[in-house]
Amino acid sequence: MPTIDCAARVHVTQVIDRCALAPGVILLGLEAPELVRATRPGQYVMAIPPAGEAAATALGIYEAESKRASLLFFVTGKRTRELGELRPGDRLDVTGPLGNGFDLTGISKRAAIVAGGVGIASVLLAARALVRAGTRVELLYGARTAELLVDRDRFADAGCELVLATDDGSAGHRGFVTALLELRERPDTILACGPTPMLREVGRVAGKLGIRAQLSLEETFACGVGGCWGCVVPLKRTSAQAPGFPPASQGGSEVVYARICKEGPVFWSDELRW
Image 1 (cartoon, rainbow, N blue to C red):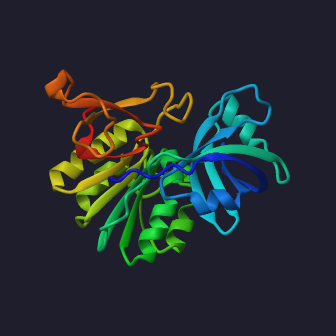
Image 2: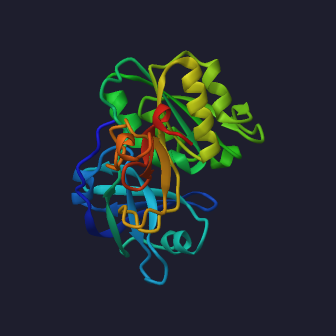
């Protein structure tokens, strides 16, 4: 997929709204008009905890409209706990938008979006853009319990068809959301974000169905700007997202390592070599 010209910078934002969607799941709205204008579906920010005692953390940009951007995240540790305690009026500095997001060109008829857990935070902008373009969008959304299928009505209101799955059977299909892919009408393409095992299975099913899938990889980033090379994934050299290493004829390899934070986080599943 084509790489996005980086328009990242540090944005000084103010929290304008906060909502706990479920225990430990926070939706934080920010006044950030310049970030909104620069954001593309699937990109993320590095959010800097105000106390400055912990490193920045990567969060997908959930909404970006008018002057408001939002971040949806699960509270899992010190950094997200501090961010989850912010209230309207508080300041939050974020660096972004970062990374290469989803390539929505050429998707005309039918798209399946697969989201697992916190992966839902990275796909709303893509879903809305596709629906506006006239694409039929089906959201396959999975979580451990029905309570953690957060904000699903927002996708329905945006025009998506919802198909749900839970590990405990409390809503929709009992089991993994990826099991639903082969049970639905064949889409033209698949967009997915979620845990690595889920993404691997999405890539496998996409290959079996003979369609391409775009996978937004989840990873813990140290820097978020590609400087530390701590978040790499093996990728075909022929990928448009492959870093420029020496070719095989000069002692290089047919597989190179791409940075998830820089060349990704979204990659074509058939170009990954993991």
